[in-house]
Each structure stands twice: as C-alpha cells, then as structure tokens.
Length: 307
Image (tube, rainbow, N blue to C red):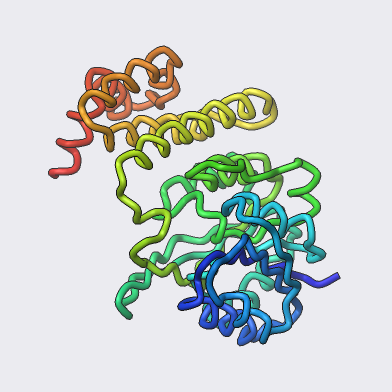
C-alpha cells in the first residue's frame, strides 16, 4: 500500500494542469499514487495528463463532488489528499505530512498560501498534535481557511468507515463534509508547513459572481447546514457547541450576499430553523454578538466590516 493517494479532478484546465502535475511528481517524498478523474473535460487537459504516470479515470461531467468521490473509490493509499487541478504543491509537502503521521492520526492539516498574479500570501497557522476532533475543530475554526478539502490528509480507512462523501451537485461541498471529518476524528494533527498553493483565477467556481448562482450557493449551504446539524446531534462523546456555532455563523453570514428581498426571505427561513440558537453565548462578548446578530445580521456584519 502506498502512503498517499493524490486525487485530482480535471475539467477544462489545460492552462494549469501541467504545473499541478509537475508539482506532484517533483515531491521529495515518493511513496504516492496519483488519481486523475477526467470529469468530461472538453479541452486538451487529458492530452497533457497522459504524459504522466497517473491512474486516469474517465467519466461524464458530474461536477467536483462526484469527481472526488470517484477518486476515493479508486484510491489505494493509506491517506487521501485532494488537489484541485489549477493549484499546485510545494515540493516538501508530502515529506512534511509523512513526518506528522507518527501518532497514527485520522487527519493531518497543513497550511496554504494564496497565489495571484505571481504574488504569494502565506497563512502560517499555529500547529498542534494529538487533538481529539472537537478540540481540533475549535482551534482550526480560528484559522484563515477552515473547510477546504485540499488542506487535509485524511486516513482512507477512517474516511471509508464513516462513509464520507461530497454531496453531488452542490456548491460549498467542502463545507458540507470536511468540518464533520474533523469533528468525528479521534486524533488530529496540524503542521505549520505552508505547502498548498491556492491559485486565485478568474472564472473559477468561487470567483463566479452571477446572482442566480449566489442564490443557489445559499440554498446549498442550507442543505449542508441541515446535514451537519443532524450528524452533530448523533455524536454523544464530543462537545459539538463550537461546531454548531461555526456552521450557524457561516450560514447567517452567507445570506448577507443576497439582495434585500431575498435576504428577508432567507432570514425568515433561518429563524424558523432556529439557526441563531446555535450561536455561542458563553461569554459576555458572545452574548452581545448573538443578540446583535439576532436583531439584524446585515447591520451587524456591515458595521463589523467597516471597522
């Protein structure tokens, strides 16, 4: 069994896939396999992919979630790593992650840098080791990036045992899964190596600003919130208060991207779901915050954003 299965979904990324794959095959740690899932790409990406020693799987276009799920089904490695095809890795990432496996963790977190127009911005978070899932999530929830799947090496046996899957056909698919993967873990480590290069590009899913997609993103976030809430309620051996507050706050913040009419509509939905009840109020400042957000999330976040 190889140590790492690197799963790379590919869809119309011929401008980026060579740099992505070069970064993988330049790793100083060599015990890995590469699984490329061709998600019905329409450009010449696969012509480039075929020049590398990868396990290539072809499927009709089904989106990022199903491409990742397909990759997991075909993985043989001890740990899963998700790599987006327009991003790339620093050469020592796998080496640094392998050094963080001595206590047999379910999850290892590493850190990211944003790359835009050849400029880099690193996010160097405080590392930790041997934390239970709830304690780990409490720390990670204060990091700059929290739920991107591409910042975690996840033990494949643990992943499959819990039947984890990315939800098909939704935006924010990472939000709908990765927080739960962390929460349910018995052992989580976080290393301080900034080894994932997140490329900011126009036309990506996260950069698309069409309003109808904005509404769908809110709808999808509600779907993920409902799922995560139900799953958290099933967990009896961990403290889920911070987890529930995080997912609630994420959803409340998201409705502020809507126009006035839709904002009112979705605010009513959130109140009916009692989303605001999950916000933490265990300190004076959190009680004040909770009270203000309940009155008007839009006003609260607008004032906060102007500070």
